[in-house]
Length: 325
Image 1 (cartoon, rainbow, N blue to C red):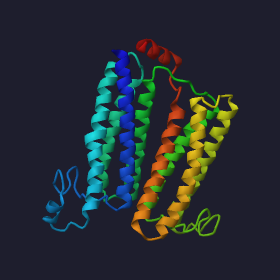
Image 2 (cartoon, rainbow, N blue to C red):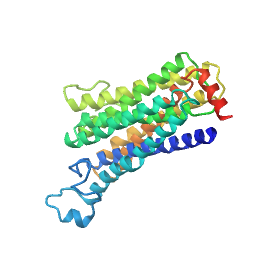
Image 3 (tube, one colour):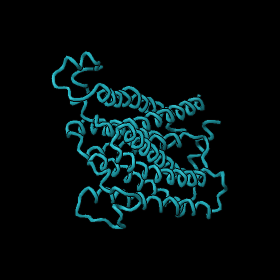
Image 4 (cartoon, rainbow, N blue to C red):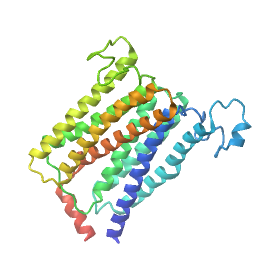
């Protein structure tokens, strides 16, 4: 019975992590299509549970298309009908598994607390008229929630391969924090209209250090500096994982290698974003912008996993194996 509960928890945690991932990408689509205020009230949308074209047409002064309204409504629906119930189910399961997997219940309690904060922030961003800083905080808390669910899934594993306790672990943690800040700064940059403040890449308007008197340039250039610093931390993590004597199949080294590869792809996508947004057409902007954030979230998830792997004492792994034997 306990083994089946562990398996169920891991599968549901994986599904929950995916749902949060989708929620973050949906948030990017909402932001890129300027749909954040297409539902001006919260938690309903124009006082409706389900907005339809006919119902919206009957309302005065709806300044958004039906597609924009649906983008925001689907974003809210996924949070309320999928992400939240799944997290509550995981909390109930963690109560039953608290002896077999120490730390699991505490992690799920923290997840529910963060979920509550995130729900409140969702309403606040609407009331705050989607200010850049509120959007960035909303995204940051979503990423923290994703990390907590991934940690809960790891705690429910029957056996885990510990990560090295040296500099590689520290750098992986630093990389995860830096990509978290970088993604948040990217959202703030986009919401502030500073996506094209630096019109060339990799230099900013052809300069290594541009004129910082423009707030948009400061924001955009700061985002690029954060991305560069994150890249250096990821490269050092990868190099230290190789020097630690870990095999190529070791989860930590494999994750570090994957993070390095994804980072390279993310830099290239970032270069494409400048070109896509310079074209003026909405479709390429939404596609490249959403993909850029998608890759960033993937990178954060990988770094968070390898940073947390083995963070619990070996006794927890032994207790879990005994409980699931």
